Length: 384
Picture 1: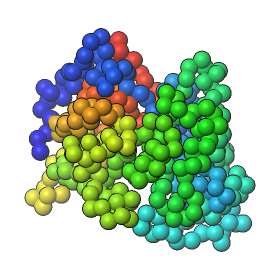
Picture 2: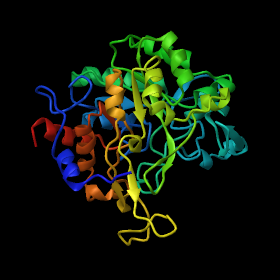
Picture 3: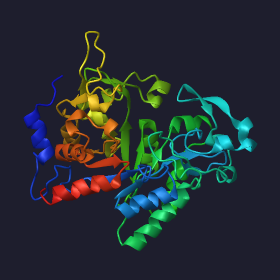
Picture 4: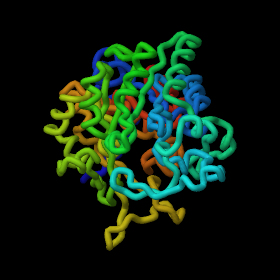
């Protein structure tokens, strides 16, 4: 793999290289890329809270993104995972101590407290906490766990208050696993979208999933736009992706990985059940490490930690172009401001990463920092 030559990087960071017509963005439709508030304003407040979504809307997000899991009584709530141990204060509730157990989720054993063992009434006694050690814990314990119904009500309220149509971008978390628990997500999700008059093609809604089987089921239930997410374990030192198989593929014996679904043939199949893809960023523009004689990544900047700051970018691949040829939108994840998440090329400036991906033609980004993404988009719109 080739590292991105500095002249090419400079051009990409400076502005669009494939701009068509008056738009500075080479997106599928020529419109500015969407800014999706990943789990709310998660760079500032605990994930998946009404307060976090409201903050993201205040910052100007085009869409808010709730991850959905089910309670024992079949109510959809906004949590990143069925396991509540990292995102709530459940461990501080002695009345729930006996609920702690080990459970397999997508074939991997996890220990903790699981939403599927709690009723909504019990969930409502819990409070959200910041799951990331490098972010403020100042708001831990202050905010309740919202239902998807409450998130949609907030979206409707804020759309009316702001005079702009705010989108919602729900993700079905572990849909095959939920089916195995007798708590399928699809029909409750569509029922709530119908309640808020959002179960229509033109609605400001994208439904996303890491499982094709889930999207194929949803395609039969709703005309809403669907997005296929693509994950991986890691990036190897040489820049190649350590990819994985979707869980629905594992269950059915399909040997294909997420990387296989990003080939031209794979994308052609994705187009039969989805309107877009949501790949992990390095599936579009990867990075490589400086390695020692053993092939291990080196601590280039000498801070005794090996992270993104020790990596340099590779040239963009053809995935965006291949997807656009098929009419698929491309919404990569996740953009973060912290320096440890930024390749050395960006010199600790998160705006430069947005510039690179916006110039490459992505149609939207999932970000923890809505304000930074919007500020960069605005500057590019102004030709700066």
